[in-house]
Amino acid sequence: MSDLEAIDAYLNNQLSPDDRAAFEARLAAEPALAEELAFYLQARQVARETALAERHAGWEPLRRRVARARQVRRLYAATASLAAMLLLVLGWWGVFRQPGATPEDLAEAYFQENFATLPVQMSGSGDTLQRATSLANEGKNREALALLDAVLRRDSANAEAKNLAGLVALRAGNYDQAIGYFQALSQQPGLYTNPGTFHEALARLKRGRPLDKKEAERLLRIVVREKLEGWEVAESWLATWR
Image (cartoon, rainbow, N blue to C red; front, top):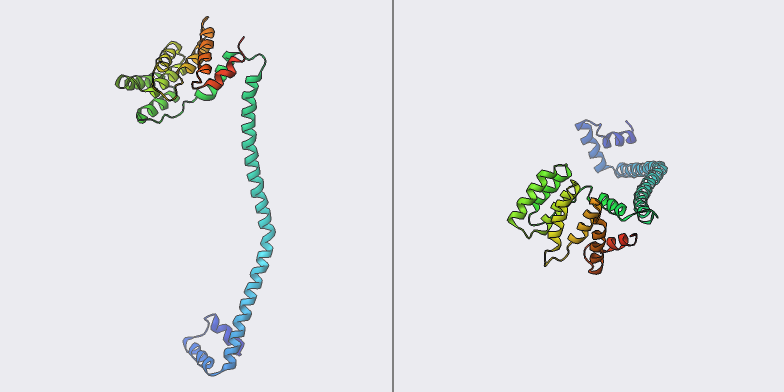
């Protein structure tokens, strides 16, 4: 066996224990063999690095294609998100700018946008209000109102429960009941924000009795004048009044 073959067999663990011991004894005794082993190791390392560089060079076009595909996907996602947002904005803007749009149209658009699904409530009575919200979103309005009435019997000053009860009744088409809840809310003092007056106007526009539109206009003017919750929307509705 040549020295090169012996080195290769040694490095690849192909020698028997006796041959391995004999080869290591030669390495200790023969500096030339030790130098040849060192050169072999260096050459093998260079060959490994060269092969790795060649593989990397071969991967580079694939990496560029993958990077481009990722950029396209990110751009598509961003564009789709922007397009969806733009369509939504343009859709609602079209409703607000439509020459024939009435306050009732705007109220219905606002209702569908904000209350077709009720947002989850977060408060001190959170569990009960969240349960009532879930029931209402499942179409179980009677059960939701029963829970909310129970909350209000225990705590008549619970503004969130009043507002939510009004919205549940409004979604159920119980306009008289909804207006009652919103009136009670609007008359409650000491609240940082109070949507009661605005929501009562919304309910009256949806109910649509002969005097409801006139009363809704009066309420919306109060909302705008006193900068109550919803005043900016109220101002845009009043601009369409005829």
